[in-house]
Length: 297
Image 1 (spheres, rainbow, N blue to C red):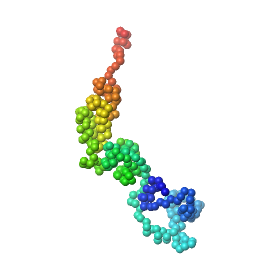
Image 2 (tube, rainbow, N blue to C red):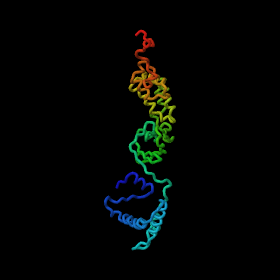
Image 3 (cartoon, one colour):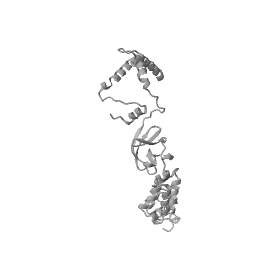
Image 4 (cartoon, rainbow, N blue to C red):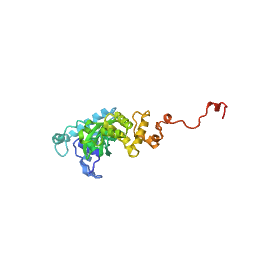
């Protein structure tokens, strides 16, 4: 028998075992089916002619009827449903969990980014750095996001509020500490930027200044530096200089790429095309006042 995720989690949360009957085989659970019919007769049928003004009033009467039904003696053996429960079942009960059960949604195969975070609904949640580059599964409730790998829970976060985007939820314990993970860190990124040039270094520094934790700026900084795989380091440095003259405090890949694609760095234009009202040079024919005043044409 394969249970759906929510049903399986409900059973595990309350330490219960689920024994489903076969489809279209009511005899697999005959006692349950009979009890449903008996309760319907003992409770619902006896209240069919009564009118209730509030839901709490109806619930109170139903509770009374169910209590009376359970206390009724069996017809063919000693005792009642209540006495059997107290003698055989009640001693085996466990206290309810301190936290109530929440229905969850599962999202499978989410990749952990280079900055050590996984994306869910345009927000970022940290994952232990040993899982960077791997795939994880997310269990999401109304309040919590849990990260799993190979059925083992790695970490959990409070879910970002509805409507919030581009927010980072980061646990310090998930970040690299010491030499265990030094594939890419802020120091190495800055060293690479310094080899390209001063303006590129300025852009990288501003990217890291714009985020609360260095790891959150790794992807944006590396996206700028990796443009040297397509363009020369000199061109990237020139584009960085142009971008720094714009109104954008922290230029990124999306600002530098148009400059390089349109060859603005090679044409000597010191302004990127994404602000044409500021950067475009005068062009075309200019007619003076004499033209409109009837002067020489």
